[in-house]
Length: 206
Image (cartoon, rainbow, N blue to C red):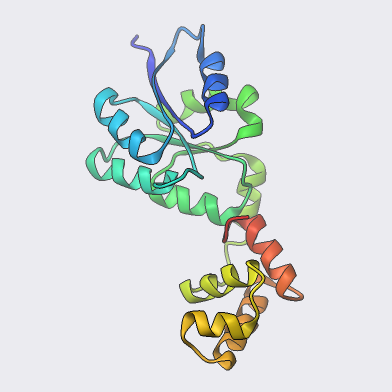
């Protein structure tokens, strides 16, 4: 049997070295290449055509989800496992919608990486129980609109309603209306609580 060809994509060299050491000595898989950005991932995919790509979510420039989308446009049957430090359900949902088959927290690599690669290569999905639980608990939630996310990002930067209104070219009353919707949708007590929830769920970056 041919070994499973793996491409590792992460902007931290130490993590890529960790992946290499986990895969080393496994007779049924081989690390064919590494990439440190989304753009590089697309290039390396074209060259090596890996069976499974390990993709970091947060990278400068092109992020992991955009890279998956770009690769799957050219290679629809490509298979991906997301590597992330975020337990947020929104990040996971975005990744799964983009075409990821697996989702691994970086803290789980030593324990779960090999089994996850084998499962995804065999055509199965792998989502850790804690992520699956988060997804299930928010499945009926109202999704924030793009404008509401913009407002929340501005709130996270410490801006007042007046500054947010000026930046978005809307009235303060409109911003207050958005904040009311945000607090309701996130079940948050106040602005700070809304930001904390949004970061935890992956709606905005921390």
